[in-house]
Image 1 (spheres, rainbow over the protein chains, first blue to last red):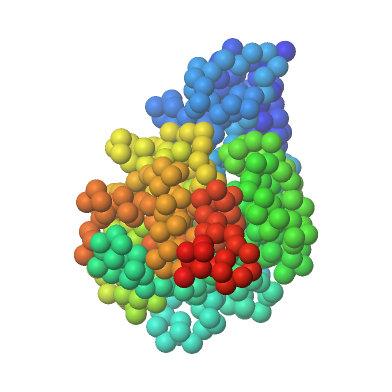
Image 2 (cartoon, rainbow over the protein chains, first blue to last red; image 1 turned 180 degrees about the vertical axis):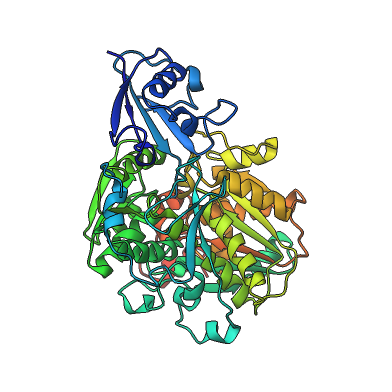
Length: 91
Length: 426
């Protein structure tokens, strides 16, 4: 099982062009570790030097922005979809 | 060239003509400073930071500007658009009224106040400015569809601009949007999609689609660096219409925050070009309390903005996760302004106050701005003696629901003179 992760265009250089990849882990932090193992370098694009989510990246577990949940500790049950999306917005 | 599938490939293959972006030179990350060639890029590949257009600014005179067209294209050389921009069908937005608002000023105890009334644009909001620039970028980059997630005003502007340009539009809005904004988008005939969710949900969906659908220009997503530049023209026009000088205080409504940040950029560019004399000015941000993540961050002294779930009648400002929020904080703090927020009741009172003192019917965002101005004066945060400009970003006809229960006929009478006098109307 595990989770599926949607990869934004600017990170697809790491995933060989794949827009969705499989990963494992019971929390978002573990999912990012799993991604890093398969696609070295990708974690540092999502997290800053202090290991926090970068200011301009939004990560969703299911439909929930993890900033409304538990951030990197947000649970990621089997079958969850994780989406990584650049933060842009304008009404 | 890379071989993976992605939205950038089509753009790489598309030949960008010389001068397609005027005097723009590159895209620069506002976070880490890394540069990216001009193209359909919007997020830094190093740090996800937003990209901004850099220019080799030309020397330009006031006379060159005033002899240009009576719309935003008079500032063509300061925008990422080609020199022949005016020859392409577009809605020709801008050069809206700067209204001297003496009666509103008196009501609030201000010495001199102006309303930059952007409800005068072709689809009745400031969004026509940004969409006109985004449309130009989309055309130069070879996109075939003009799209957006929207809280309504942008929906109107994109649908209208696409119709005028003869290209397809796809507009995505929250399903609970005001009926006026739904109809004033649908009438233009593009594809209008109501999404079951908040604006932030719609925006997320649009961001995902933008990564998959080649040929789609989401004006405020994948061509956002160009789009956002359009709001500089508000700053340009304010300075030009004041008689080529800077305002001392400006109050701007905040949704994503891009408008406020770009008004500041426009004013600074005019200073840099020697078109106006340098002088201190303060920029103030206005939010509705029901969606006030930037105001909350300002008051808490934070430099990051914690997203919120919006709950306010000011739907055009209901962006719970405003991408330009951190830059709004930077601008307001740098200039000595503040970010403040007001309740929905104050918003309605603000709409009425603007209408009754100046004959200007603003939408809820205008109500937010007027109410915030009032609060800033009353709390001593804004100098009543300094010349102040406020932005009315959209037309009250788009948010009739907001005031439907508040205003109406004073009396309903039979069509006779007796009835008129009996009703005490003389």
